[in-house]
Length: 131
Image (cartoon, rainbow, N blue to C red; front, side, top):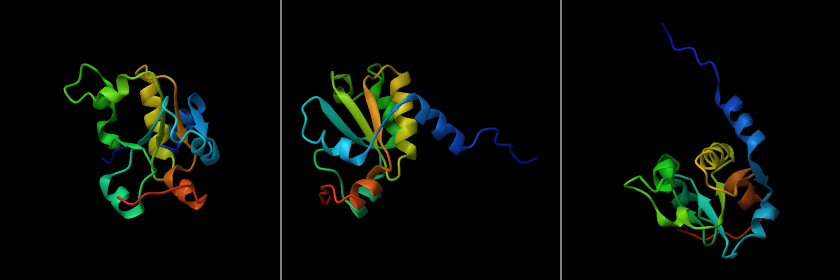
């Protein structure tokens, strides 16, 4: 008997977007270089190599996020223990919406994500660095 999916990715992303802060590319661009903000790139390393990256962004593969946030995890990254705003982004805004929701549920505050992700960032002509 095949698996029956009772809630698809569209519903999950919609639920996440209803509970998190979503920033436009221009709002996110205004945060570049601010000491109290961390831009968190959730994309796969191959995406970074292929597409480039935002200047100064911290790379955290999506699959490691919960482990890097939790101070009790052996994989914890101290950057997530800092008193800063965390702005997540991915390729198109779906993974980052889910990630921002999870980070918020884990107690990380304030958090947000970028509408349209890195694709929208590049399309807007925002700065990109090669990897």
